[in-house]
Amino acid sequence: MQDSATRSLLGHARPQAKALIAGAALSALGGVAGLAQPLVAKSFVETLAVDEPVSRQVLLLALLIVGGALTSAFGMYAVERAAESVVLGARRQLISRLPRLRVADLDQRPPGDLISRVTADTTLLREAATNNLVDTLIGSVTLLGMLVLMAWLDVVLFLAVLGVVLAIGACTALLMPRIARASKEAQEALGELGSGLERLLGAIRTVKASGAEQRESTALERSAHGAWQAGLRAARWGAVAGTSSGLVVQLAFLTVLGLGGARVANGSMSVASLIGFLLYLFYLVGPVAQLASGISGLQVGTAAVRRIHEVLELSPEEAEEPAGSGGTAGRRAAAAAEAEPSSAAADQGAGIVFRDVVFRYREDSRPVLDGAGFEISPGGLTAVVGPSGTGKSTLFALLERFYDIDGGSITVDGRDLRDWNPTELRRNIGYVEQDAPVLAGTLRDNLTLAASGASPDELRRVLEQVRLTALVDSLPQGLDTEVGHRGAALSGGQRQRIAIARALLRRPRLLLLDEATSQLDALNESELREVVAEIARTTTVLVIAHRLSTVTGARRILVLEDGRVRAAGTHAELLREGGLYARLAATQTLGPTQPEPATD
Image 1 (tube, rainbow, N blue to C red):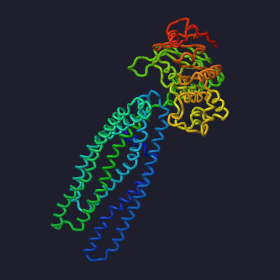
Image 2: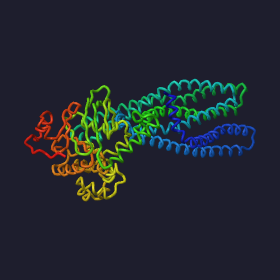
Image 3: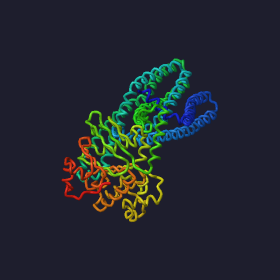
Image 4: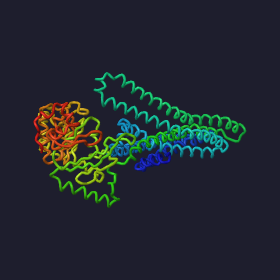
């Protein structure tokens, strides 16, 4: 698992390999300048001892210090630039993948956690895939160079220092898995906190109206405390690993001071060599700390890259192979089949057939649809009614291929739904959800979300159809007026009409309306019914309604109960049959005394 995460980490760094190599080379050059400084200092002491001019050594030392600093600065900039590019690449991958994931996969992950993976985890990846990689490389090279020069100065002291470095290095290596585990737990805790915040802010009006601010704050505080505890565990292990770098130098210094002093005393080592060795020892702090920081950061980064790749490894909808097709030939056949219905039936609605459909949202749950079956011929208005929780909205979710069925079959225009590419299928469908979501942005942005190429004339026509022209005329900037977060500046009825207009702009062959008039007043509802009836002449319109007055004129009404279609017919036919529909109609004063509606 660790090897896989490390390979993935290197994969993110690979596109910036040239920039990283250049930055690492410049940083290494700065490190070489640092390596040379103790040797120049040793020469400086030896020159002083024989009372010779030291101007050459001083000038060389100054050049090494200034040149090393400048080179390191340019190297650092090159690495930081590559780091930002790595983050951009990872975020682009996630951003392009998330909207294309299957709804079933997205249902299993809270939005706040996904946001954390795009923001916080990619920031950790930034450090690991660039700075920490370079730190580990430069720290290793510099440390190796210093050890070689130490061995050249005095083998005995070098072996003593090497023993200390290896002993503490082995202890640090044992801590790395703990650091990685603690870092992953900390990142998951942050994702949970983000999910809680998204939940609160997404329903802030409901929370305030319910007087539940304190309860929600308490829940968030628990999540924040959990993130704090996880962060402390990660910090604890990181501190232990970080302390090892200082401990290496301190123990090595004591060892060299004692052993080196004895060797100077017995004449087997010169004072200048001891000073040079001690300078290398002090310089050892940087590479050791750099190496420890780099390795520790890589552990954090591998934890982040695992979370990122949990999303990247999910199959997008476009990658799904149509059922029954084999490889490239199957895809070509499916593509050819997709093209035919669109061109052949561009001026009529889509035909739909459900046969013994079984569907459950989770494997361990009872079916929402259990043997549902019905047939809808192209064109006309069909309504779906029934008690709450019987699977009405699920029918629409299946037609949009947000989910795949567990049994039975669904066909659109005679083709099994699983043979349709989801993108091509949805081009033929206009869908108005029950809560009619409106996105932050302008009114124009929302209307053209599904039809970016809509002309001004088309916009005007649709706005007139859904009775939105008065709203647009009253806005300070017309269609370019901002509607606020989730359409906060609009009423519920206005949001519903915008959602309907958005669906109509797409000129769909199948229009799905889920409680699309629930927030409209009686006058606007009546006018919109006329619009829907007109659309139904050339488009298959499927409507879910709890308010039966909106669907009494439907060509056909399907009565859904316990996951099955229990009855089907016109309003008058279903009233005569009695049963569930008649009971529903009676509760809404739509009994047999009502005049019989016309049926297309």
